[in-house]
Image (cartoon, rainbow, N blue to C red; front, side, top):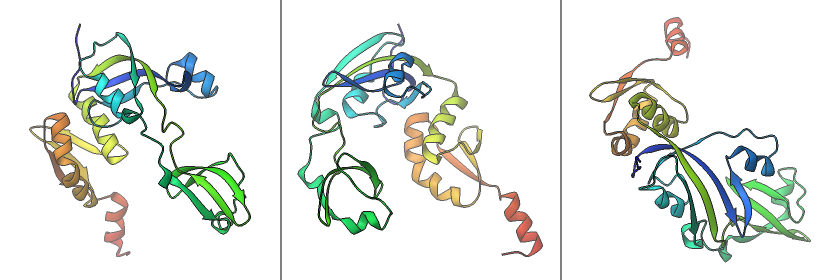
Length: 221
């Protein structure tokens, strides 16, 4: 059977457990147990690029396509130990400024991170910025369902990760990205990583946005 290695792009079917409890999955029957209305979709992973927890990322290497595996992951290779410095006491006014009335057990997005309200005491709110899975050993059951080998499809996946969407591009000796001048900065930043995964360098071709061209032609700012 064919096996996969670092920087291969794969489709992954998985279920994750912490202390025996299912916490994440894209297997339809398991996903329904967590989010009944959610639609199961394959997870696209570039092996060895930190797109899943370290222990699972390492476990994917040298595995056979289509074979089911089970791997136990210790805390240090999962979501890490719980950290005391991520337990923070915040002024109640910080929440009120966002029209939030905090209560124990509430989960909020704060400063780009998820936080759980532990206690509310007077004008102070104790919050926990640790991952809910921090300090827990994990178990993953997974199957690599597909290895992406088509060059255009591989580029699509990597560019979507890097650009958040798929820009117009052309495949040749290099992968030429076509777009506005702002793309050039991203291309320089991502080029080394892109070459490591795809095996080709990125190039840039300026293509002005039509609306911008129309504004320039009409003399608009």
